[in-house]
Length: 498
Image 1 (tube, rainbow, N blue to C red):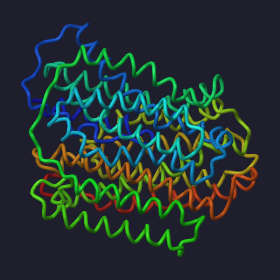
Image 2: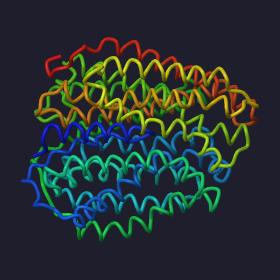
Image 3: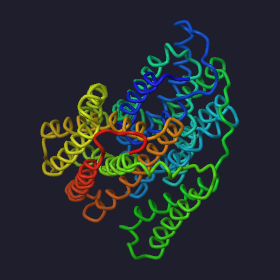
């Protein structure tokens, strides 16, 4: 079993790295505690092989979160995609990933973790090829959804398999390296995506996954040993209710601006989604082995942390979705040039987050989280104030850095609160639940802020884009500011009874 110190330090680094983008991040430590005895001591080459076997597929799925952002304007032109389509290019991946986040670990425990991990790689690879071959928005959206299902198996099980393969004395360092690989994939996503689109074509951001996946499959099968966990009962009804409810609400928000908020389709989606989510709560209270144990929310620290995480994801990642396109649509930069310009924001958390992890015990998680949310809200408001058709890039550097610092101050302390607020038996599920909430927040953020954008602007001209972008970012800033106020409700010291 993992020692508490090894688990905590590795978890903080993992979470701080993985949340630097859409997606995904996040049931990453749900399966971090293996039930089998620790593996025998590994040599340097064997450890490197295990890290490569779990790290390369995990790098692929984290890279695909942000690699598509700088390709969106190009894909929009090539496929004749609408703003709604662009949202689904992101949300199809995010929602399918989030829907299986709490289920993938249970499936791996029952059927074999390596088997499900390999199946996830294969599915992700095939879906990547389908993305590259897509000739229209619907086909690309469908392929991106299948990619997300594959990623949901790869991400949590990669950490589980690594933990089971590495002896306890080496586990902390191994998990730290794993987190660094994941964070690098997220941070480099915009840059690699821009370079590939500039040098080749948008299809190649997906084609690159195919040879990597084909090579990773036999390598991982040879290096990794099979393992099983507790034979937990699956909760298929909970999965259907949660996935259906979130999908319906997001669909309604995305289509509200185009079809009208009182249109039959939008009202049916919104009301039906809320009804499904209400049904989820009722079912999870009754079933003996719930997918989403609601007892976790009896803790004030856990509940508040999830509200703050949701608000953070909605405001920040909804803004990133639109800002990533600003430099191309408005200022005419190429995808690679746009990717380079976002680096102050995406790279800053990699420096700040580890420092925040070291300070959390001295300063307190509440202070760091509240400070981070205030900085993020201020940075987004600053961006909204300076955004114009002819704004100089230099004016964005300071707010980009401020936003990166705010994100870095949030990740590790938020993870610490979530884990400290749960009992030892509930920590894995608490982590998975928290990460699922944030993933849903990413999807809602893209939907809500894009809806604000569509109500005020368009892609028809640079000025039209700015007209929509400014109020959308302002709304994002307001949502994050609400999260900052809510964070003040966090207790000074967090225990599993808070």
